[in-house]
Image 1 (tube, rainbow, N blue to C red):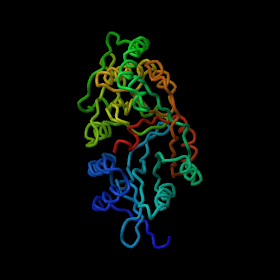
Image 2: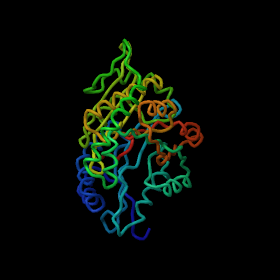
Image 3: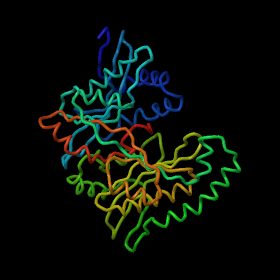
Image 4: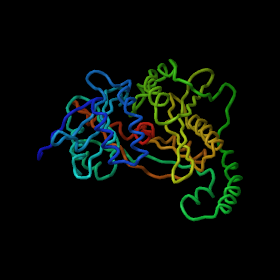
Length: 355
């Protein structure tokens, strides 16, 4: 390895890790990594034998490349597995290629863990597949344009007055489109969630046996990810029917190309229908419009019901997104992954783009 050594490190590596983020990422991204440091190690799924740790390629006593190994729990074919996901894999420019060595390490480990995640290119997906991993179908991004003039102005030169006029013209069209969205019926309510309570654990416990392929959404994970996250502030909304929890959505407001963007960071039904997804998405879009967003987005894995609900509620622009890769290192693991990965439920909140 020409003097390189792969080692595991923990919280004590903070300063060297943050020094690398400042050299590799933008100022804002490096700031987010700094804010998220302790939170990543406080992950509730970080337990003895599978803790949050750094995989570091060192040379001459210092880091050349590093990746955060984030532990979790994953439901696959109705069973739950301990999982490990690579986050923030990076290398100093003079050590380009060592990050790939670390990635290979994830898929060569034989700890009985389910290893999964998103690479930053289809080329790296092919590398993972050659090492035995399976690849999901493409994920889906759906976009809803709320202010068309402002959206056009963000992409190309357009006078402010023309953008405002186009926004005004588009408003009646949006209102007409909203008529396709379902209406709340008697016995149904969508409410704000301060913290995820015991009913979310109970609902997940009932639903986990029916899940083909998704990260576990127990109460501890949901509070860690969407309440205690130090990097983003999320609006959390839950749908109830006759007092029973049906599903939830986590929403956030971000800026992109100088405009406000609303993102459905997570959306999940414990048992429900296309209409229930549509109720949550319509509620999200009302929140995004009140917040002055130019457009909104939702990203998800393979879900006919969610795709139809997004179309129904105005998320009419559709794009394929990079597939995820996954490997389960135990007897029969490859067949288990292949059987269920086609039905992957994976939202933005399962990724590390926010932190």
